[in-house]
Length: 154
Image (cartoon, rainbow, N blue to C red; front, side, top):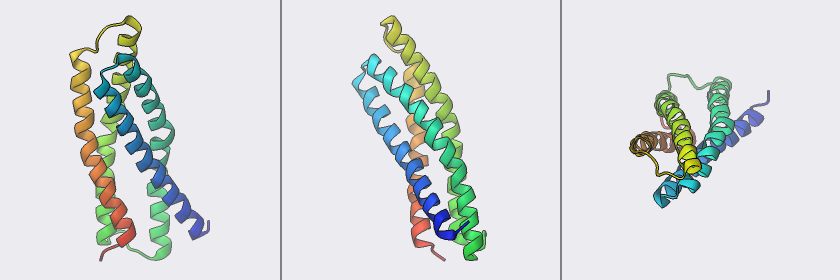
């Protein structure tokens, strides 16, 4: 496959990956700050869908296209910026896996509370705080990865 096409796919998929993460976090955060159970139920439902459609698929595309480009461009995988990018990507993935599980639980609890007209349980808010705490290092990791992709420091 042509290098430029793979590079385009890599950049496009990184945009989907990062953009979905930022957008999901934004809407989930503000829906939760509203304390409107119905809004939280709707937003959390679509955040889970977006994660499976965009984040999961691009999470596979990114390392595949990155490896291809590094190989074709002659960058050793042991290069400083590639090694750090890989480690940060693994860190972000390690944060994302429990986040997906948490989002599904948050979605289910919110749907139940909205259906029954009850407030969200204390466990919901505990899970939500954990969701936020896991999102922060993942966000920072992706910002640094973007810098490494652009700067390629020695």
